Image (cartoon, rainbow, N blue to C red; front, side, top):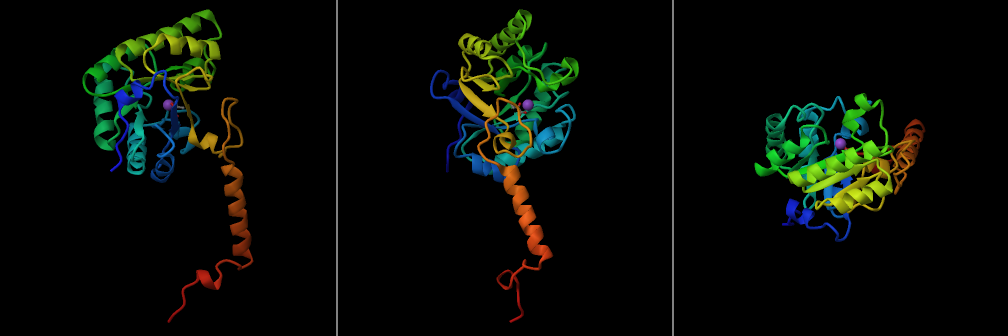
Length: 266
Ligand code: KIV
Ligand code: NA
């Protein structure tokens, strides 16, 4: 059997070779990504990427658990982290603990991730001390879309820079084993990475971070549009639509199914 990576092993990767992370939402995709990745994140981006929601606000515990279970069935070696959805942890440590326990018990994943906010530093300490490794998330916080008025890069003003840096320091001091840094300029990402003991995992946050993460469907080219920070490593949208067109043509011309694709009575 393959040994799965652990939270202390990930924490120890600070300053070593960069951590390779992608999101995953299904068992077959997790199975494919497992060999290449250190961490698979069952991101609440699943709501937008798979379920077509306009933001991550509508994502539920049930959705996270269902996709977490699927990813755990596919991933053998990668460390699997499940996002805590909007509304499942912000009230405070006890609410967060109850929901994080559900996620770990029902999925078998080893850790949760939660976006920074006023109660989160207390919550990271509370969970970590009670056996639940926590990944922090600072900078652009997609669950804050309604107060921010959209998905906007962070750190354009000094006050905002100070706030993001402080959130990262607080998450680190509270015991986060890694911290996602999203949507910040390179110099701020470098400052955060230098200021914290936990490895930083960047998304739209430059090469200054200790690791990188992308939404898998973005990097596979499944969408017409993707943000500036995404590199497309495949063109799945074209591949899939070409395949569907070819299939449609063959069905309409009765070229499919051919005799070799047909059962015949003996
Ligand atoms: O939900 C998600 O996919 C994320 C990553 C992009 C960090 O939070
Ligand atoms: Na997320």
